Length: 178
Length: 454
Image 1: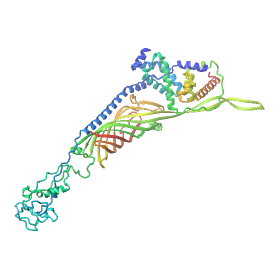
Image 2: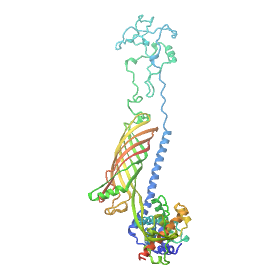
Image 3: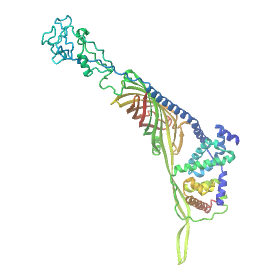
Image 4: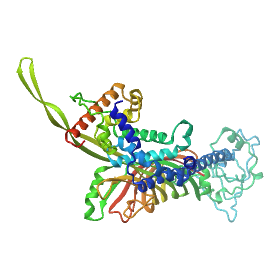
């Protein structure tokens, strides 16, 4: 891995290509979590890799793993992509969403593609907050700062996302898909 | 974080999605190649700015070395303002009568002078002159020193002063004075260079007129255009594609910056050439509406059995959720142009002038970057540096005729600012021959700039 990092810092095209081939599939999953369509996910991934190669000089192996650093760039790129498309953060309507008990091992029966599909079906604002909180591990304060919203808005978006996921999983279970 | 979320996180962090590596890497590589080329444009711009600063400095230093215009030589006393010599006048201390010969000298002609002329006064008592007769020019009598011809900057007529009159009255006996040839020859006319012909350019400074040749000048300008875009299908089969592109692409603005060198003839005709960078900006908007039907458990009925005993009926309800999204991308088309123009300028006043220029620009297309609807009806990104069969863009060369109408204001000698309107037409499509839709631009716009004479 060190030779890859050094080669990318030296702008070696072959090393850059190798790094791309190695990490593109995993980072594509991250891009797909934030995008509404496959094309949009490819745009995010392309833009993210260009930033990665441009800022490779700033990566310090002592401060963390390369994959985590690259994943953060993908997330930041996705957030900027989202900001360009959505000028106003959507408000949450106070509608009734009953709580559904989800079987403890329900998620284990779902593979990654199904999870991605469920996440993609979330409304854009809920999807973004859910990804940042549940998958990336940001706090509500950090999410609020990143997106320029109030913490309460972040919490309500997450609550809505969770309820909607519950409902979707329950529906799949009821229909015998899971 | 719930268990569901923890497990989702673990699964999704490990999962490798399918990726079209080849196509994605090609686009990433183009973006990285662009970064390498960008510094070249920076150095070219820096060189251009350096040349401009050097030209301004050279002009400023040259202005300091210009020799002051030669002072007009003091005009000699006009012979027409001398007082007539009178024998009995107080100003004639000698009170001597000028010798007058009544005999006509062969070869000389007699000229009668109207009364009121200084030389028409009667000279009673003059020796040899009958009383009451006009001064006889036929005799070689008074010869005053011939005044030197006026210098080009001097005016011909000098107003008479008391000093000159007194000087004239104390002049010596005409016999000692040289001959007066003035009336035998026409007076020298003033130089044409002093009084330019009517209608000549009043902005011509003496130095410029002195050359009466061509002058070298340079200028810098910046401008904005409103691109008029034309999208037409080459065959009827692709009318739908042209229409979809028209619906999804919006022209924003065009900007240009350039410099030029030119040669200007004193008659006002000029020939100039230069270099211009031009960028057209557009926006691609694709609105999509996604409708999701989400099943929920909702209360569909209420049965009141008795006061305090209510039964709620739950059932699946389907909620239709509509998500509207807008895909927005900014497209840009870049050109390097080498214009060559022939122009004519005429002056309205010492400061203002108007001009017209017409010519053609060699138009080099490069770095066309756009996202647009492709033939399959889906948005696709295209960059001109990676052409493939059926690709819409490729770097190339075309010719663009243009015409400019402008006005110039002279700030100082050799330095002026100008504003002009320009109409330019791309004579060739910016899309490739194999692409089924023609894309062409007309560019009306305005330019502002400065010009200096070198």
